[in-house]
Length: 119
View 1 (cartoon, rainbow, N blue to C red):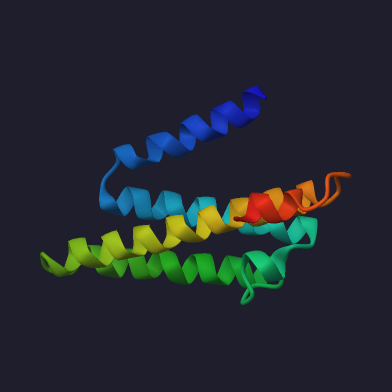
View 2: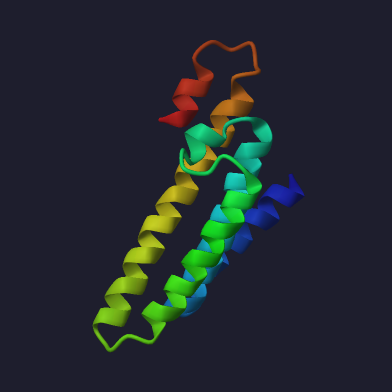
């Protein structure tokens, strides 16, 4: 329980950085949640384009390069691009967390609990 609380606090504190920092944190959190989903066998639901750890590493590298490229853009294009990347990536992380929760809850004997968790 303490580990879960520490993870939630760490996720909450990621919003305290610059757009570039939060984009990097979001990419790292997406990589971790996608790897967790792959380990559970729920990789297709969490991210249909990534079906191996190697492919995930490549996409992380490409997205980090894209963030660094966006960080060199002129204002307001820089802010808009990084804000959009953050919004999309944090949405993906939320999806991954619910997919993982639904996968865990599907092992319980309570009917339809995994569907409720996914909603």
